[in-house]
Image (cartoon, rainbow, N blue to C red):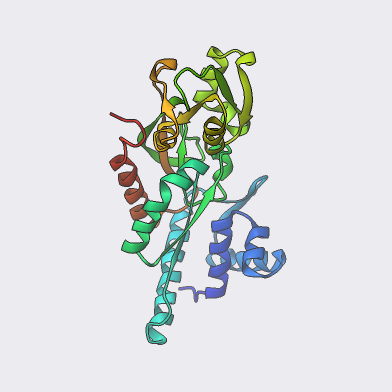
Length: 285
């Protein structure tokens, strides 16, 4: 039986969480050589490799997720020992990063996080807002909430609800359109605009639906917006006959190489249920 070095375990868990020796070193306040030494000591002591080095960082080897899950449970147990030894004054927290789009982070997820914190005060949540493709989120989040036609191979998840789009303006007879730029240019809404709207009818563009909404309010243009963004602003009207009903699934998932602890699985389930309960907000009948 191995005598576990809890310090080595801490380094292994941080590399598993960040996917990078350099980021792990920064988080732990040490140099990268120290991180490598502790990871190597852990692997040598147990006679097995845990990570493989790739061009994108350190990836958990196939079949090693159970090691990290057990290590996290052991870490939680050690923190609980500390809490009890100090009279219950130290709280063991589970840190979870949820990555989503700027619109979902601004308008949907804060209420979910508030409810989650009320029910599970030991869960510490960080919201990571980004409209970039989902495959770039693998090393930045424990959970992703993303509108996409499909979920990339780097993630495992479920389709929770469909997000519907509509055309919005301050008045129903508006004729000029706002274009979608940056990451939004690859969306189903942008493809519809490219196929149906002439370039000369588009005068402004933005890479955020929140920005597009404000441009539509301040100007005289039409913006294609998620229904939960446009319907929630009384300054805009949805012009139903301008475009067909366009929808894209919202996925709730996690990186496929990240271990799923019972607590994380519980958060995933709560999040899926929360989105399903709000299906009418997203335009679902």
